Picture 1 (spheres, protein in one colour):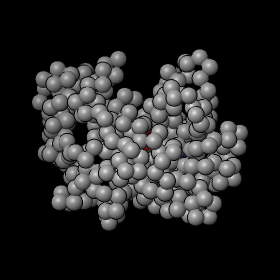
Picture 2 (cartoon, rainbow, N blue to C red):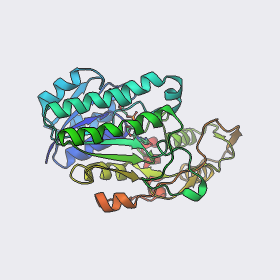
Picture 3 (cartoon, helix red, strand yellow):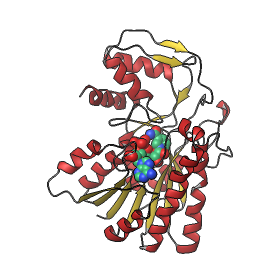
Length: 314
Ligand SMILES: NC(=O)c1ccc[n+]([C@@H]2O[C@H](COP(=O)([O-])OP(=O)(O)OC[C@H]3O[C@@H](n4cnc5c(N)ncnc54)[C@H](O)[C@@H]3O)[C@@H](O)[C@H]2O)c1
């Protein structure tokens, strides 16, 4: 049992993580500015009688973060708060860097000043390695590619601060490079919102657009598997970045077909021109996560999609 501070805890992954931490008996302080997260995502957690949970509506770039860390004295910080929208990062790179770089450094300063032992951060396995060729897949952590978006750059660049804080102050850290995460509570506007967008529209019988030929493919990993990895990183995987995905690729057309079957959707997809800058293919090699964290994905795509559709139905 530990005192844990979760940034971004009202978001998709953060709220699933908060539920798990409380179920395992940890004491949790959530910091979130509710810019994309929703307090309703924490309804289950907040409705547990005597749950050791506090919520702090704070921007991670503000000095108030230091006060929360001073008050709650976490042993570990699980840092998920971020500007996660790739297109927004291209349109407004200053905002992206403010949240993802300056916000993270603000948190590291708070951690250093108040004796936090470890910080775990989530980064983007889809954006920090650039655009690998098909022969390079699945991508390992040492792949030499560089980001093709400001979001990828902010997420990759800020990792260097973790090395510096470790060298200067002995702060322990792990970075988890997530593939395309999907599951209950995902906002259809998010980075990998394709599952919730498709599922939600299919359940309502609405038309659906696929951009490009639908053969672009992604590595879809279920949110509870990602939560397993974050929890494992509380005690393990110091000083490394680990990819968290399945190593398998699923095309948008395959995803469409699986979701259509699960939702009883009978319309055909409508195809529109490919969107510029979209990755053709990505899959992550997760062997390091196996060795460092004792982690592997447990949920098949079929099961994860079924659980997501059930949630969308509710
Ligand atoms: N969803 C994915 O497929 C995916 C893939 C790779 C990496 N990630 C990473 O996982 C983390 C969580 O992403 P998510 O999918 O749950 O997104 P999300 O938008 O649901 O969660 C992010 C949370 O951070 C909060 N937040 C944003 N800016 C903030 C700020 N300045 N101060 C305080 N809180 C702030 C938001 O309100 C939200 O609750 C992010 O770090 C993201 O980069 C997600």
